[in-house]
Image 1: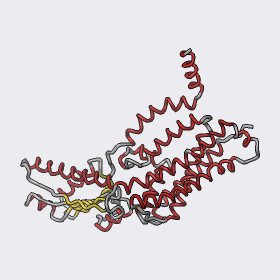
Image 2: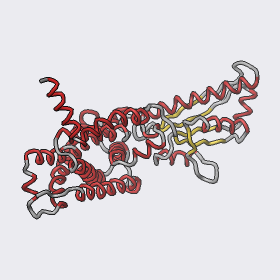
Image 3: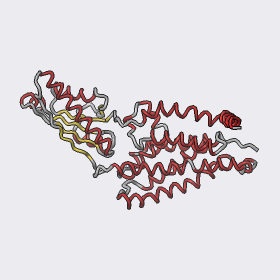
Image 4: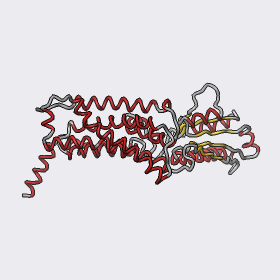
Length: 371
C-alpha cells in the first residue's frame, strides 16, 4: 500500500510540469547564482583621486589603488579633479570616496619617512563606508610595505591615513536607517506581488474563474480588477509605515511624498503584472507559492536589500537592474534619507514605468479565456 501511494505521488509530480521544473531548477540556480549575489566583498568602489604632488611616487600609489580590483576611477573630466568637484560626485551618489594626496608627498616620505593621506568616504551606506575605509587602509599598508622592501630597509616609511566620513544623509552612520526603507519596499512587494496572484489561483481552484471566462469582459479590465485593489492597499501600507518608522526608529522621510506615491503605484502595477503572469501558468496554489518563493529570493538577494549591488560580478549587476525591486529599493532609500528632486531619480522612475507596461502586457496577452 505504501509503495502504491509513493508511486502515485511521483506520478503526480511528473505530471505537474511546472512544479517539476521548479524542483529541478531551484537548487541548480540557487547554488550557481546566489553565492555571487550575496557576497559581502565590495568591489568597484567609485574613487576620485586628487593628486597635489604629481610625482612618480604619487602616481605609483594611484596605480596601487586602481589595480587592486576594489577601486575604479570615478573622475571622467579632462582636467584633474578638485575637492569641490569630488564632493559634488559624492553628493550625487556617483562617488564612494575621495583620496587626497598632499603637496610634497614624495619629498616628505623620502626625507622624513612620514607622509599623510586623506580619505573622504561616503557613508550614506554605513556598512559600505566602513568596508571602503578598511580597503583604503589595506592598500596604503601594502604600498608602504612594498616601498620599504624596495629600499631594503625595515619600517622606513609610514603613511598615516586620515579618514573623513561624509555622513550628510545618515549623520549617525546607523545601519538601521539604510535597511529599514528596504524592508518597507519588501513588505509592499509581498502585497503587490503575491496577494493578487493568490486570489486569482484560488478562483481557479474553486472554479469561479470559469464564470468570468464566459463573460464579455476584456482581459485588460479583468487584470486591472485584480491589481487595482492591491494598489490602494500598498499605497496605504506605504503611508502607514511613515509614522511607524518615524516613531519607533526616529527616521522621517526627507524626499518628496508625491514622487514616492507615483513610484509606489508604478511598482505595484509592475509587480502585480509579474504575479498575474505567473498565475496564468499555475493551476494550484502549491505551484504558485513555490514560484513566488523562487522569484522573491532573487528579487531580495539581487535587489541590494542586504548586500550591496556594487560587490556583485558584472553579470549579476546586470540581472539586478533587470527587475523592478532594485529600482524601487533605491527610490525608497533615497526618499527616506535624501531630499532629492525628480530629475535625480528619473532613471528609476522610467525603469518602473517600463516594467509596469511590459509585465502588465505580458499578463494580459498570456491570459486566455476558457469557456
